[in-house]
Amino acid sequence: MSAGTSLSFVVCTVTIILAVAVSFTQGGCEFKKSWIGRWFLSGVPNLIYINSTHIETKGECYEEQGDKYLVYEKSDNCYRCMAIHEKHETVLQYKETFCEVKGSLQDICYGITGDAPLYSMFRKHPEVKPVACPFKSAPFTFSYNRGSGDCSYPASKAESCTDDSRLVLKYQACPDVPSTESNVEELVCLAVWKEGSTRYLIGRISQGNRRNLISDEDQYRCFIYQRNTENGKTVYNIAQSGDATCNGLQNAFEGSRTMKLTTVDNHHNRCKFPLWITDHHTWLSLDHHKTYRFSSKNATLKILDDEAPKPNKVHQNYAFDFQEFGFESQDQRQQNSDMRLVCHMILQSHDHKKVQIVAHITSGCDSGYVCMMFYKRDSNVIELQQSENYAENPDDACANFNPTTTPYTTLITTTLHTKKCPHLGRYTLFNPIASSSEQRKKRQQPAEKSQFSDDSGSSNQLSADCYSHNYEALAVGCGGSHGMEFRSSCAQQTISEYSCHGSWEENGISYVIASPVARKSTDALRYCFIYTLSNQPETTVIEGSLGKKVEPPILRLSGVSESCHRHVIPGVTGNWAFNFTSNGTCSVDNENSSPIAIPATLLVLLSALAALVIR
Ligand SMILES: *[C@@H]1O[C@H](CO)[C@@H](O)[C@H](O)[C@H]1NC(C)=O
Ligand SMILES: *[C@@H]1O[C@H](CO)[C@@H](O)[C@H](O)[C@H]1NC(C)=O
Ligand SMILES: *[C@@H]1O[C@H](CO)[C@@H](O)[C@H](O)[C@H]1NC(C)=O
Ligand SMILES: CC(=O)N[C@H]1CO[C@H](CO)[C@@H](O)[C@@H]1O
Image 1 (cartoon, rainbow, N blue to C red):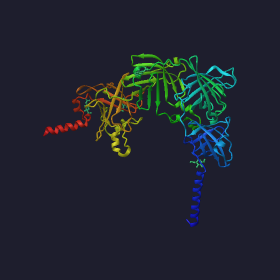
Image 2 (image 1 turned 45 degrees about the vertical axis):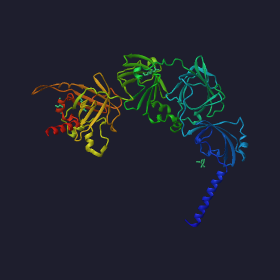
Image 3 (image 1 turned 90 degrees about the vertical axis):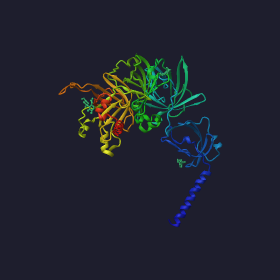
Image 4 (image 1 turned 30 degrees about the vertical axis):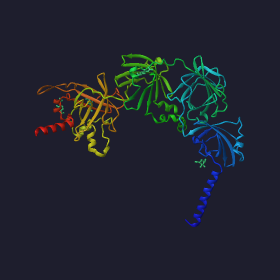
């Protein structure tokens, strides 16, 4: 760097510092931190960016007093007054003067007249969570008027969604009223506020049939609403703006479009889910991804799915997603598996063990009636079945319900107690001659990956080989343990122990809810062990040199991680499957005859004892 350039560098730097200093002394103020972001303003094609000092297209904050800001526009070297009101974190409203020559804030702001146009800006980034819609106790019937007369017959319908910031408006066409059409609109409520006695709502409206073409200009609408009671029913009168501003709205009865929502009577008989189900307010799926929660009044069940596909996870940030993904929310919501179920009618109840219920279901913005069966399996285990289709009419919900083909969902309580596992005894792997690694591989289930595999991966091939599938013996409730112990025959004997939390039998097949005692990363949280214990067919009696020999029964066992699926064939399918032969009870006699099944600790103890005796 030469002396010349370094001097000019210094001069330049000083100039910049001076310029900055001057701009600060020249006034300069800051807008509210909460305003920073990108905003939509009707009539402006691009979003308006606001930072702490600038409002894009308006200028720089020069002087501030209360909600009045003197804003300097550099390009025209002029000043304007803006009176900015934050109605909600999503809504800024302002009035402004023309850009004028410099003057005091008071003088310039005096130019804002009462009838100056009001501008409404709606925040797009950073996204803000929608608010709960203020129209409580949907569903509603409604009439509407688009300026050509009331369309009240046939009645239009408004329905709630699981997400209370959404409402579905199902418009009906009235043959006698021009410019009415049947159409489905969805309203997402973004902001509500009150001015005097007037209540405002900002919402985004989307239309089912024109989803990709829709712009912010078409979607943002301002509403004034008013709650009344008529003949014991709650009524909402709503006026909707004709564009993406709040202009032209005076009250809840005049607007580009008006609606009158009326609550529907006696929608649910509001039965209660039986006590043996609601005894635990929260139930979990075996993998803990789904939560079933009963309301305090035991009439409503909410099903929350934490594994919902991504677009649903961000549904709180709906406003933003709309823009980013194009409007496909209707489809996305159909995948949303969060549901709300309201008990509508109890059809059959059997002895606190089984109950059939018609429930009103809301899933996303879809709703209807479903048939549900609840089964009590054990003190901490219930199962349920739910019809797939939503019926319009509650009487149709259970009409075509087939319990033999409807899948079951197994639910457990949030805390599980350890219980005695059924079928106590010792088992050895069926066909134990197979000990070469070739035959071991054959034993593995080819279709589904074993949950028993080693998590250390390929780092130790020998031990991995040893861990996976090489279970030679199973001991249930032996040696002081109440669990199920799977043992491998490897040099370093590995034991996988499972605790049992409940069991039941159905059509000769047994089901046990079990959890791994020391959980490996590849293990499921909870398993449903599905098994049969039966005598070997045909070969039950074998003629031998020593006479007749009765073959021991075979235990066919499968582990399933999600639910106790009825399509699983024990010993054949499932996350993993084994066939074992019974090796008798846990008695000492049997322990002596089957060294593999003796717990390692017991072996050590025995050899220590033997050593003592020999001395
Ligand atoms: C605000 O934005 C303006 C341009 O719109 C920019 O010149 C200014 O440096 C920004 N201020 C801050 C604090 O980021
Ligand atoms: C709901 O169920 C719980 C547990 O079964 C019970 O204690 C409570 O009284 C029930 N509440 C109502 C309002 O029925
Ligand atoms: C268990 O036995 C059944 C029936 O004999 C057989 O089909 C299945 O493959 C066996 N399972 C295993 C893991 O060997
Ligand atoms: C009763 C019975 O089946 N005992 C068997 C237990 O397992 C050992 C080892 O596999 C066999 O040798 C026993 O005959």
